[in-house]
Length: 443
Ligand SMILES: Nc1nc2c(ncn2[C@@H]2O[C@H](COP(=O)(O)OP(=O)(O)OP(=O)(O)O)[C@@H](O)[C@H]2O)c(=O)[nH]1
Ligand SMILES: [Mg+2]
Image (cartoon, rainbow, N blue to C red; front, side, top):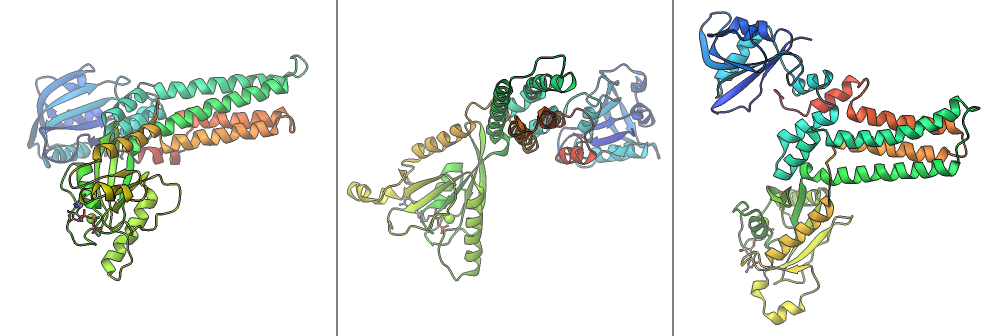
């Protein structure tokens, strides 16, 4: 293993920045750069040392720093680690990083510190994903989920399921290997076990998919005819004057997004161009974007102008849940309101009437999706669990027709996928890099 280094704090102006070095040469490298009353290279782990960093070539002083020492295996990566806390800003951390590289380290790839922690068995792949979730979390609820995962909660759930699966594999393989010595298995019993395992796995997948909303976020598109008050409503819902509002139909051309939090879930609202036939090139492109956006979101808010109840655009087909709103009802008499065709809500983006109910309806939708999500799974993890579920189904299909060897083969395959999910055994480099590529440099 070579020694890697990176700035672990975000780029930009800040009080301090941290340069992280990990690998067998960490102490030798610091020795070339650092002078102070104590020598970090000889110090015990978990100690901090004050001093100055000097350029390894021209010996010019670069900054006053604190150096923290971690000794293998008691560090984040499991290797010897040194962290240099220097003054923040755009230049100083880069000067020090450059000095560290010239003294013998290599620039770390994104996620490489965490990848080493995994390779040194400081954490499993599920926990490595938790590190990513934690630094990317956008809400308090997301942090809670990521932290529980980091503590091993998700790994334990997967492992517990793996043990149930393995106990069935053992029973079956005993019949294959020692046919004469053990009583035969009752096919109905195997059938029952397989069904129970599938149910357990399905519950895991469902719960994990629900929880993933805390990280993925919930997307809501506001769409409808021009001038219906979409941008006015958008500004109200995101709580700022973000989109331009005018009385001219066709004001919004591009898709505008803004994020808020509802029920602990990051919610992204999309304001879109009004849907209509148009000759205007720019507006036409905007309308195309509206259609594409509506295809990608989790919920549509169809905003209709109550003063023009005859204008109802074509609603995109598909299984997108849609809330239909009559807007501008402040301009109608109570009698006119009653005569409006059926919709989910009557609102006024201008006066705020009905918006609390609208928020409540949206929150209901989100609650329905998140449910009592016990944990969140990444797309990779869901994919592996779904493949394992397919293996279980294949096992069940072969039961009674193809013999126990084939059943055991499918169950082994399912077990293998759990191993891959957690990160046991040999994980191909390609899979590892696809996981760690999503990290930032220095993590
Ligand atoms: N009285 C009343 N006027 C509204 C309401 N909502 C919006 N308006 C007015 O309707 C006009 C159009 O509002 P926008 O929010 O720009 O409408 P839009 O749907 O975004 O329009 P496009 O971007 O052109 O598609 C503006 O003059 C708003 O002030 C409402 O609830 N009541
Ligand atoms: Mg608009």
